[in-house]
Image (cartoon, rainbow, N blue to C red):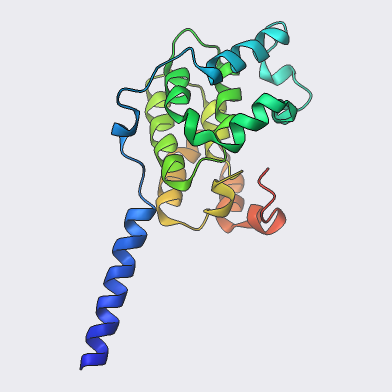
Length: 188
């Protein structure tokens, strides 16, 4: 009897810890944070302008942005720029290309921040502030999401938005975990 009680308590405690660890970050994390105009905004704006305003589709590889030292620095510590990224994604004055670059720089967020980014992207997409391409860059397993494709919290958010972005065969492939088995730990 005592053994079953300990087992039950251990399972309950583990479940509570897992729920808390893998739940989205509270929106209060951005309270009092500076909005646009920080290092992320300046970098994305400069990168877009250096390309003479060409759209992300005209890039030979949209992930080339990560080859620049500044982008690599931002992408390696995205949590620091999370609040600024949300503001940039919501900004009506930013182009969809700038929003694509921003989402690429946020792909290595810790899972709790990433789940929140997925929620914010969903809301921005529904309001028409980001297009399906930006949402697709957030949804497709790369970076953090590549290692959490199995997590129920990630899967529920993916299933909520994927039909408006991906084809049914692409959705099935992503949910199968094939991306992880093809690229374990590589990130992109």
